[in-house]
Structure formats: structure tokens, C-alpha cells
Image 1 (spheres, rainbow, N blue to C red):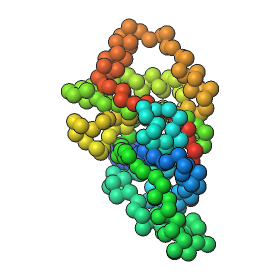
Image 2 (cartoon, rainbow, N blue to C red):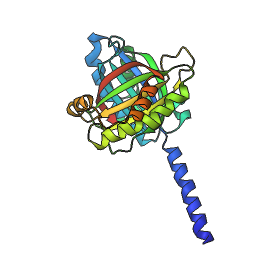
Image 3 (cartoon, rainbow, N blue to C red):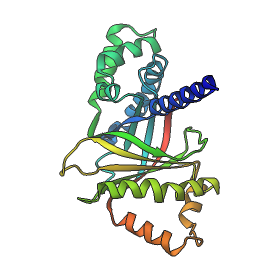
Image 4 (cartoon, one colour):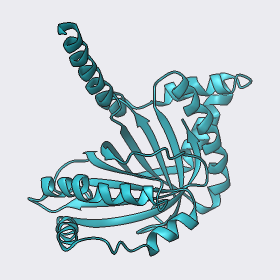
Length: 263
């Protein structure tokens, strides 16, 4: 009996450790490319997919996405969103410097010599700008088996919790909005939802404090979700939804299509 109790305690501890290890940390790079250099950058992002795949094989990252912006606050500011996934906040902050990326490029393209790789990167870096970068930690997500593949849609909703309502807003997302999104997933109206907290930048002048990611397998699912109205909500549930909405300012919503993915 004592051995059984010890075994159960050990199992619970291991489960807690595994859940802690599954916390995702993400770097969002909002990328701007001049219109006359779009085709050059398309070639570069395809090269980057091969580079980040080498980084995944080396366990430096957990994944990488490249999204093309369909709509947002100001599309002239940037046209793409690149997300790099990590399972450790230190690795997230360290990221991958240029020397590491060059080494992975050499592995992905063994036929290129050192000079060719260096020239490739210098030309690529010259055609793009990163006007905004966010460091995020995933707080909670839905239970689903959504498959990330080119062509899926996502809306990235940047939020800013009102002063004094930070905790109330997070509680609302976790206890009120997550069940709503989980229900939509179970009804086939959504693929995945997750709630993220901004790690950097910090402070009252930061443009956002949180972000939600809403994933859809295609435009049909996306538009069905927009048209759906839950008529089964009770008055108490509607009150909690309203309170949650009033605890934050929805700064921007960006709709994007996944073009490249590494998992």
C-alpha cells in the first residue's frame, strides 16, 4: 500500500513537471519588406524554413511559423509575422544570432561555400525591417489536435489590460473565454485558441500586454465562426463576458495566412 501511494505521488509530480516543460515561449517578429523586394523576400523565407528546420533538429527551437498578413491596423507597417517557438524563457531571450543561422544554412545548403552563405545573408537582411518584436509566454490554450500546415488562418488579437485590471482580465480569459473557444472547437467552428502574456516590452507605455491566437483550418471555418451566435448563454454568463471585455482594450486584430511552418 505504501509503495502504491509513493508511486501515485511520483506520478503526479512527474505529470506536473511535464506540464511545466510544455509551457511555450514565443518570439513574434513583425516584418516589413519594400514592395519592389517582395519576390526576393519570398525566396529568403523559403530558405529560412530550411534553416529553422536544422535548428529544430538541433533542439534549439520548438518550431517556426511564417505568416502573410491579410488585414490589420496598418499593413504598410509590416506584411509578415514570423513566430519562433521555444520551451525555455532563457532560450527565447537568447534567440538565434546570425552566426548560428549561418552555420545552420551551411548544413541545409552544403553545396554553398562560406562566401556564398555570407553573401546570401547580407543581401537578405538588407531587404527587410523588423519594426516590432514581442516576447510572449503562453498562459493557457484549448485542448485540440489542430494541425499546423500552410494555408491555415489565424487572427492575432493584441490586447492591453486596463490599469488595475490585469489580473481580472487574465482570469476572464482563462475562466470565461477559454470555455467558449473550447466549445467552438468541439462544434467545428475553430481549430485552436491560446492566450499569451507579453514578457517584453514591459511598462505602462507598452502597446500591448497580451495576445490571443485564434486558428482556423480555412476561410469556410473562419466565416462560419464569425456568423455563429451562441443563444444558449445565460444572463450570468453574458455578464461575465461583458466584464471580461471591459477589462481590456483590443488594440489591433491581424488576420494572417500560414505560408511556411516547421514542426
